[in-house]
Amino acid sequence: MNLRVERAELRLVEMPLRSPFETSFGVESRRRCLILHLMGTGWEGWGECVAGAFPGYSYETTATAWHVLVDFLLPAVLHRPLADLADFQARASSVRGHPMARAAIEMALWDARGRIEGTPLRNLLGGVRERVPVGVSVGIQATPQRLVEVVAAYVEQGYRRVKLKIKPGRDRDDVAAVRRVFPDLALQVDANSAYRLQDSAALEALDDYGLILIEQPLEEDDLIDHAKLQARLHTPLCLDESLRSARLARQALEIGACRVFNLKPARLGGLTEAVAVHDVGVAGRVPVWCGGMLETGIGRAANLALASLAGFTLPGDISASERYYERDLVRRPFELNADSTIDVPGGAGLGVEVDREELDRVTLRSEVITP
Ligand code: NPG
Image (cartoon, rainbow, N blue to C red; front, top):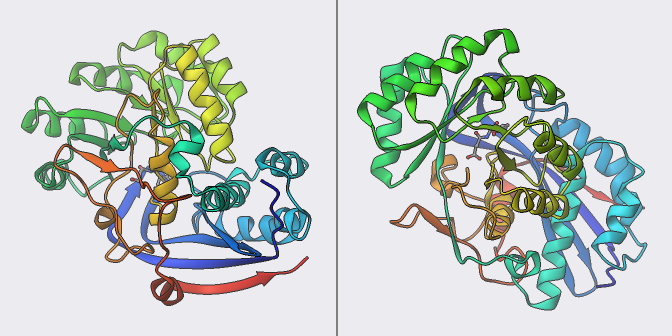
């Protein structure tokens, strides 16, 4: 590939969400993230860093990612030719942690490689689908009744799989209310680490509702208690925050800590590691699906390419642009097809054209990084 990155521009952007998104760790009504633009002679690549304003999902924030990108990761690639993606991984490996920061550069390099070779990212990654099944993730609402209304509106739009956010005190009643109205809907829940093993009764009660999975009920660093919990449940557990590498994914399977994998390139430090976790899932006959981090169209394109791999047998948290934003950062917003799928971009690289005017409009801060 041999890329010489000559210019890197990093932007902090803020985009209003169409409706506030409440999880067990807080409410977000304006989405902040970082957008990275890498350039060399005759090429460019775009990346998105999904770390948010608040360290609720993980320790990373837009501010920590800015620091790690500007002070460590970007200087490691600027004006020092990269032989390939593995070369970037090797240079980035001296920085501990901060996967979302490193994933932003990795995404931009994949995009650049695809654009230079004239190949869509889905082909570079080994994808086999041109459209992928998707669902919608619904935040905690004021009441179970309101939740049913919100779910009904998404079902009306054509989403055939719904994920509900839960937390202690907002679990069984919410699930029961939705299940009563939608007996056949593909339904799953996500706790974002809000429970402890001693709360397992609340989670065992969810076994009665035909859920596809219960996502990340316990702490990120706790594979052992997840294994104990899985042994008490019929519903498959799915890990998200805990799966920080292919190694941890393998260990989670070995001890029975989950039966499903949620894959997010950002949490794993990039698409390369996400493909490696996918391969662990396929080898272990574990269904995998693609999670979401309220991405703009840039990150969404990468997620769609990843979700086109054969092992992604469950619908992803990859909804249409209009579910999140009034106006997306790409010229052709992502739309939901009638069969609850979204098309994987077929253009070179990420296959999206960034809307530069809109990007300027939502940018709070930008910096051109020089070595
Ligand atoms: O559709 O992109 C989406 C949102 C999916 O629920 C979703 N994401 O914990 O997985 C999660 C959650 C999240 C969103 C976490 C934003 C952190 C930030």
